[in-house]
Picture 1 (spheres, rainbow, N blue to C red):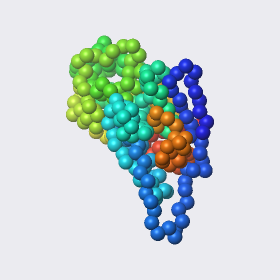
Picture 2 (cartoon, helix red, strand yellow):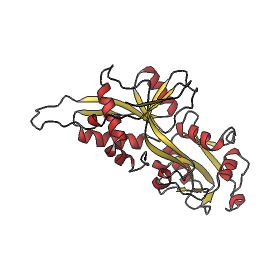
Picture 3 (cartoon, rainbow, N blue to C red):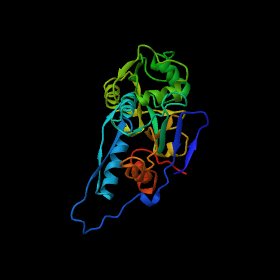
Picture 4 (tube, rainbow, N blue to C red):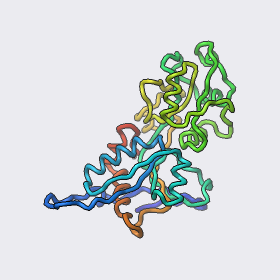
Length: 282
């Protein structure tokens, strides 16, 4: 398994290259299979991908079952550290030096963060600068960006959310979000809050978009699988499988985890990823 190590950093990002283990043939004459359960958790933004992965992989490997749970990035990291799960899926990966304990990570898809508004809002797009100014509190009325004379209600995800951390890293930089922003404790809560408030703006993983809200173009580019794949949409990130160690065969089920990760990065796994996310590309 090839690794790229960043000198002086506590992070390893890996591409799993174990094609020979990506799919196991099961003899039809086998009377019963001993099922092995892989525990892989996910942040809320990455859970749809994990569910697609688990369903597709289990259909090909009838001896593999999955135990899935979801929560915020902070919750998933805590479960990783206590050993409750050996791996979890996330759209957020802490920057170098942010973790005292080294993390191993393998990219499996691409995701985007969409700025979302109520479907009745006539504003169809913003620049990155305008979006940043709205979330910083410098722009407070929709009329200042071509909309109605209506105060802007800003919604953000809770502290500890991976989507919030990625949004702040990609867009806000060192600028804090306006203190009066309202908190949405999950992606579903964010979508429901924006759908119920014509004055609201928030952000959401592109995989969680639904007709109840409308995504805005950013710098003239709409978020989509195509614009994520060609790197033209600005708020773009990878989805990572994250653990404390590479599954190297030294622990029980390591070879099963390794085969699953290799499948996720291979053609079948990338086809599953493309249903709601963007594949890794070349």
